[in-house]
Structures are given as C-alpha cells and as structure tokens.
Image 1 (cartoon, rainbow, N blue to C red):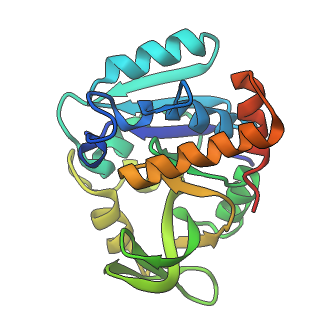
Image 2 (tube, rainbow, N blue to C red):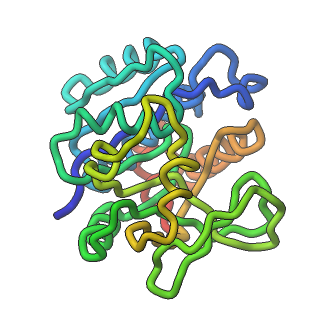
Length: 255
C-alpha cells in the first residue's frame, strides 16, 4: 500500500545558511519569490502524498503562517518543539500524529525527486523498518557515504570525508512507525546516530538508489545552485506564473 503521509522536518536553526538568509528557517529561504518549502510540498503532492505533518522549531510561526495562508485545505498538522529534540526526537514526536503503519520522512531543506509509490512498495515487500533513498554522488565531503549489501540492506555508514564517488543518504525515508514508537529511545536523540547506525546489520534497514534531482540548500553555495536551476527552467520554458514555473520545474527533475 502506498504511503500517503509525510513528515517534513523543518525545525533546525540553519546556522550555515545565515549569511545568505538571515532570520528565516532554512525551508523558508526565498527562491524567485517563493519559499523553498513550496517546492518540497509541491513535489510530495505530485508523488501522491495527501497528509502532511510539519515538525517545527526555530521561527515556527513563519512556516505556519505561510502554509496556512497558501494551503488552506491541505490536510496538515504541526508538531512544535519547545526545545531542540534532535532529528530522532523530532521524528518520534511527529510519528505520534500518524495514523498509518508507515510514513515518509523528508528534510525541509532538501529536494530529492523520489517515486513514493516505488519506495513504499520496496519498503513493504522487504518488510523493512526503514528504507533510505540514496543518491550517487561524485567528489563530495559534506556527506558520509553509505554502503549496501547485495540484497540492498545497509552494510555501513561511513564518516564524513572526501570521496571521489559514493552513495549518500538523501534524507528521504520510508519508516515503519512501530520501530520508532516502541523502541527504547529517549526524548532527545539523533536519528542518524542512535537509530540508523545502531540498527545497521539487523536486516531491517535498506537503501534504494535513485539518481534523479537532488539538492540540499543547507549551505549558501547549494542554495544559490537551486536558485540557478529554477531560474534556468523558467527561462527555458519562457514562463511567468509561479504555478506554471513550479510544474515545469518538477516535471524536469527526472535525470
């Protein structure tokens, strides 16, 4: 069964992006007059997501105001951190608002074109606790590499270091709720360290490589890269309206 609910993690402070975007959550960074989260929501809707849970923290009111105004009929809930919970704590708190067995988790500052139906199908057929969307990349040091076994189960997560080529965690997950909600996890914890790394090798953690469009705007250089990519699509298609430009951009994301 295809997953219909997504958690968008948008509670971070975004300190590395402050030089380019002051006093805004990363997901609200403007792109040609639209906040980045506009593209995250639009892509998830395009892939069949119907229910949204926004995990918020820093300047949550800015995100809530935008989403409530621009998406008045969107099926949505907000989970607001009163203190930093880490990625794991944020996911755990948001999972308590999910009514399905499985949920998709994405980062609010990352756009990764994933076929949610295929991700859901893989997750179900492999009886996975978590399926990670992976991206092949060349010449990188911002991310740790991920190694797979022949059956696509996760073999290892490598520390961040320069790699000529490798596969990275794309920050999109299909997650079985029970694995988080019934696990012995504290209120505050890192999903990457305390959940992903500690469950490596248990046969329940899988990765699916997808080489469609990926961008993480967490640093000014990549934020500028996304703006350039979007403007190039507008120019190529001679578009003026934001709706048509967004549709054209999303349709162009398949590599």
